[in-house]
Amino acid sequence: MGADRVHYPGLESHPQHALAKRQMSGAFGGMISVETGSEGQRGKVLGRVKVFSLAESLGGVESLISHPASMTHASVEPDRRAALGVTEGLYG
Image (cartoon, rainbow, N blue to C red; front, side):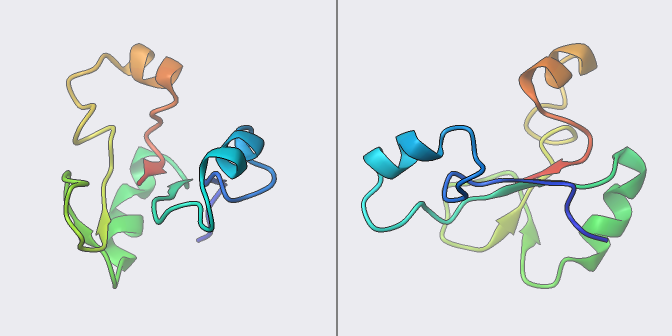
């Protein structure tokens, strides 16, 4: 199971790569997001994670993974989440 889409400003294919390159010196940061599958894939994705812990907080130094559609954005209406790009297959 691979990622359908990777969101990372360090990739030249990212729509804001040029902006990130101007604003970030030396590195593009340690946060990435990936889209893979749908809600039905959630158990498979989270069940295969070995290094990351499932958590909502992004304020620590631990290696974390989150599923925004069921965690931080769970109270947002599905249509609004989709408009914001928060898909069922998005992990951060």
